[in-house]
Image (cartoon, rainbow, N blue to C red; front, side, top):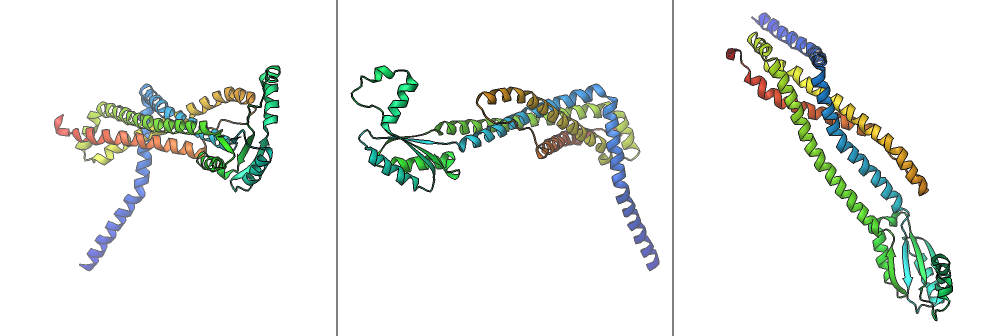
Length: 325
């Protein structure tokens, strides 16, 4: 009896091992077979892939815009500058002492002093009112100090804190941060990023619905074959597997198409941006999607395709029964 039990356990072990070895082969066969099913319905497959690719290309393009906008803002952050307008009663000696005190600030990288006489001289040249300004009894322009923060203090929040400290100096009448407009740019970039997330969620829902509807039509077209398979003992999981792989293939091809569309658009815009940056003598270059981002895009498309197909097969394959024929 113990020999029979040992033989039975050995057979169960062999059967389990055989199933584990044949499972990847079955999955591979069904994955290739589902790819063949897509090939046999080229129009439906191509239309679905194009809809998926275009739907995913829009949020990917917006993400590319946000990424490059952040790159531009980082370049502008490092070029921040604070302008301090001194009181008209400030003497040149007091202004020089203020310059020395400001140079001791740990957040300050460079200080440039412009006296009131130098400011008036430059204004005469640049404004074109040189002769008219000769009739002025006093110089209306104050002395100015240009303060360049360090790299760490050049961020918008840190530069504002430095500006607040400099305004407390008794000789300073008014201070202006040249990066105040950058705060608005950062707010706009944050708004666009929120829009990207909202649009991406809506488009992801549409991708799931599109894949689900495509798989539903494929199931209905094979309704009789599914009923026969159930009649001979096929399980629901075995029948569902090819349709799930179809959703995966839709995601793969849709993700690749969206990456191709974004790359073509980025290449097209590179020429126009180069002409614009040449006018401003800037070395800015449009950054495309890197390998990790492309991989994430395709993986995300595969997940959406798998979710859409799973929802569809769970609902419709269960509803098909051999007795109903």
